[in-house]
Length: 282
Ligand code: NAD
Image (cartoon, rainbow, N blue to C red; front, side):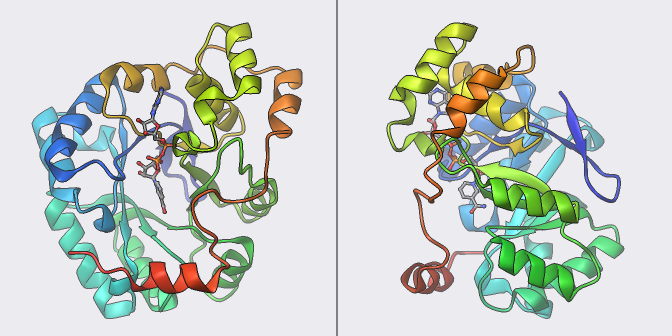
């Protein structure tokens, strides 16, 4: 498995396994299957309400802790310096771990500055090897970086063939922030699995559409965390490191960019109100 090096030297697998929307009672089995298939990066969040099941799968796997890369995320209701520190302890406890590899601010709403200061302390104390953010558009990322000490190691943002984020990518490169994609398969939306351009490229390489879309991301050194509860698809999604997309493939895929999210617009006040107001059992 290829790795990327985060700006302070931590190695992160280029491909991992996401567990968003996997129900708690299926998560342990799914993560155990993913670890068996060879995944070593697991991406969860307090808001997914399945950290305990992820922890059980990790414990059951017997895989040495230092071979795993575990990410979780802090939800909006727990922002602010003191509550963020307490929420971190609760996440770690649910995961059954004594440290994290990556802790992310899940959304750029509310008192994420206070949360970031708590995360800087957690990082300095070695309780999480890296800290980062998620869903930060370029303006918020630049602002956070300009007024704090530690530069986020990672920004996890919606990125796929229909929402390519090339400007975001360029800015993150400038700052040394690792780009991580969520929804790498466009969550199956916008006719992703029937797209004729992707189907044509897939045929030419003897691959599947999922593999082409994931390859397109990792070929740009963007970390991917596709999700599937099916072991055959887990294996398929891992099997992308022995071919390359050509310049012609890349040009055709570039034309698929719509420049818009297919999930929610972080600049829409209604979405900000709605997302910022959601409460989870964290
Ligand atoms: P995804 O793009 O990974 O798509 C998942 C869908 O594709 C599922 O319906 C799955 O059944 C299907 N699928 C997976 N592999 C397939 C294959 N080979 N062939 C056919 N179908 C296949 O969407 P996602 O789960 O939303 O994103 C991946 C991960 O990103 C999440 O699990 C989560 O960890 C993370 N995420 C983060 C945020 C955030 O706000 N930070 C938001 C959404 C997701």
